[in-house]
Amino acid sequence: MLQLQRRQSRHILNSIPTVVYDLAVTSKGFPTQWISDSVKKILGYEVEDTLAPDWWINCLHPDDKAAALKKTSILMAQGHLVQEYRFRSKEGTYLWIRDEATLLRDAYGRPKEIIGFWSNITERRRAEQQAVQAGRLDIVEDELTRLNNRIALRVVIGAIIVGSVLLLLKEEARLIWGVPIIGLTFFALGCSLALILFWRVVNSDNRSRHILNLIPTVIYDLAVTPKGFPTQWISDSVTKILGYEVDAALAPGWWINCLHPDDKEAAVAKTSILMTQGHMVQEYRFRAKDGNYLWIRDEASLLRDDDGRPKQIIGFWSSIAERKEAEEQAAQALKQEFERGEFIRSSDRNIATGTVLAILIIGPFLWGITNIGLAIFVLSCCLGLMLIWRLAKSGKYY
Image 1 (cartoon, rainbow, N blue to C red):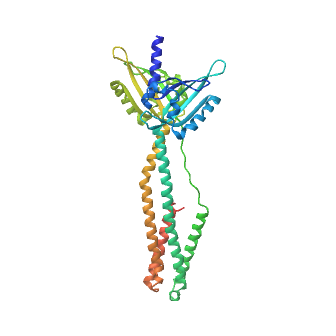
Image 2: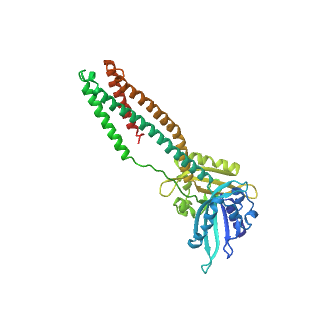
Image 3: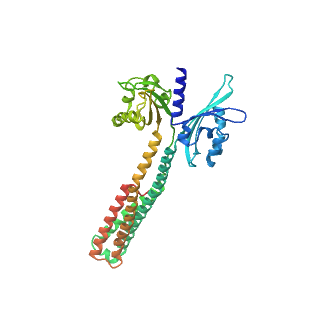
């Protein structure tokens, strides 16, 4: 029975979607004593390769090596260390790894060994990078849109002020009834808008963005019975990740009751895939103790007895909330790219419209004041004010 339990424990450690390792603490360094078989699945190396001296150091990315080695002192001083770095896989590509290590001491308090695990966070890092790049593009294009709109505003306001002054200075215009009032009105409006524009420049605010965080694992063991899949055992990490005590997680119906309503039907239906194919990976939202829903990656394997009958299910939950959030931000940024393009095209049109209106406002004074010219002047000023109001309403100018 004890031997069976040991085999089962070893199977769990070798199946978990994380590399588990055990290092000795010696005066010459930290030689690897044992590493789980999952190192081949995740990094492509055979276990024998990883036991070679300096294997870990040699596989670190050149830009991350110094920092990763330096942080060993934190582990020895504080007893716990979490860091992220790039690590070369067997095929030569670099993967982002989250390394969480704990220092164990003997009965006399002396450092004895280091137990740790590596998680592949390449997808999360890639999504975060896409979100950051999209964010930078957003800033650049947003500034371009604002610059174009500022130009359009200045052209129209300048034209209104200059046109109003020319209207007041034209001797033939002063002889026409009501023209001085029109000129003074648009001149006052233009000057007021210019002052408002200047005030906005002085008081314009700065803008900023940010993101970050972490990925652990819950191990569970389910029995396969005619009535369902009752939980036989679950790791203590369920408290750290989801906030539930182990006893609460062992209650009948706990898993189903905590599934997000929109994901419940699909998650339950996929059980049939596990029973027929022996392996299943799915992602869904799961309610934590505090009531918030977290994105979970659930990887389960079906174990059979000697007669080939389903016996139990061993599975792992990994929190992928940060990855999902980063992916969502990246997707949202890409979705907004078309809208940003529309803003830029719109701002280009605003410059063109503003230029045409400026010509129509000042134009009548170049070929003499007539009733038609005066009508064009008034109409163009009104259209210019409408353009200014629309840009001010959009907020995309400062």
